[in-house]
Amino acid sequence: MMQMLMTTDPIRQVASRDDEDDMWLYSRYLEELKHRFPESSSHIIGYSENGVPIFGFAFGSGPATVSLVAGAHADEPVGPNTLYRLILEMHQTPDKFASLFSRFRFLVIPHVNPDGDAANASWITRWPELTPFLTGMKREIPGRDIEFGYPDMRPENRAATGFWEREEPADIHFNLHGMQFSEGYLLLINDEWEEGSRGWRKQFDAAMRKEGLEPHDHDRGGEKGFNYMGPGFTSTPKGRAMKEFFLEKKDPETASRFHLSSMEFHLGRKPEALCVVTEFPLFTVSSSDRIGVPENYLELKRELEKITGQKCPEEEEVNRLISRYNIQPLPLGKAMRLQRLTIRLAMDFADGYLGNSL
Ligand SMILES: [Zn+2]
Image (cartoon, rainbow, N blue to C red; front, side, top):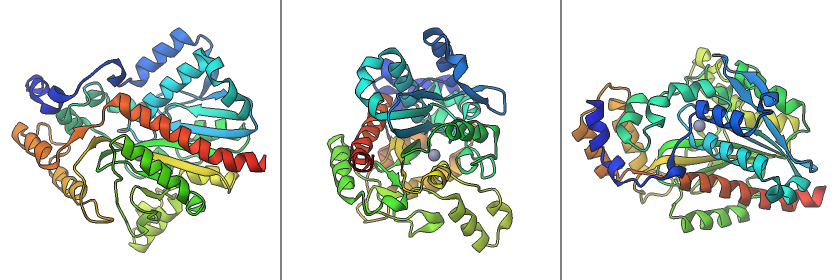
């Protein structure tokens, strides 16, 4: 049955694939590291719960520190793929990065959640097929969620904080995430930079539209600490606000499962840091017309609740969803390019500020 779905999934048929569109699992990355980076084991910063090594790399010796981390959420493999590629490039062609390395020190954790990656292998290896994704996608629940486990909820959190604490506090913290579905791009920026980033956000919006992505426009009214900054932008999540949200709902048990996010951890070390969380989708859906309400996205989410986790959703039903919501994969090569573009644009933006203060 799965074989049949694999060959008939319409997304599979329309998606063009090349090498760049191949998702890498952590296991493949480890092999590549060993092969191309013989000293890599000296960069192990800790181990996952299942005993898989977690790597942290430092490049450059500039006065400003840039942190890059990916993979916190198990079902968001584009961020780790972006950082795998970046690390291999930085290691193999350091000359290309010489100017950046003289101005910045990069701290890169390509995957903070290798166990989550392994748990999602069934669909990651078959992406961009939709059916394996719907049946095989796994995500950690609160209390297991690494993003809200700082500084020390899980061994993965302890590995990251230990690595960061051995270095100067980050001036910029990039946290590469993703969404399963969205109506376009979504970028999260810490509240402290809401005002300072207004002009830059216009430039970022123009750059995304040029790439064919509209903003994912979702005004959550400050719920769970997500403050709306206009179409395509919202504030970074806060474990403290999540805690309060569940306490107000008289659910102290869930509230106790939220600790700090990595952004709160970095802001605790340097309150003026810029934190940027990328949220590009695996699949785009058609845009809605209403300001602040992504109606198509919300309706699809409601529909998916009924079928996600089912062993084998009806092929007809999956096809209906694809055409009803115009579900399209965002090709991996393009998604990685957008992640890199975001990092570059945000660094150019912050560099102005850093340049003035250094
Ligand atoms: Zn995420």
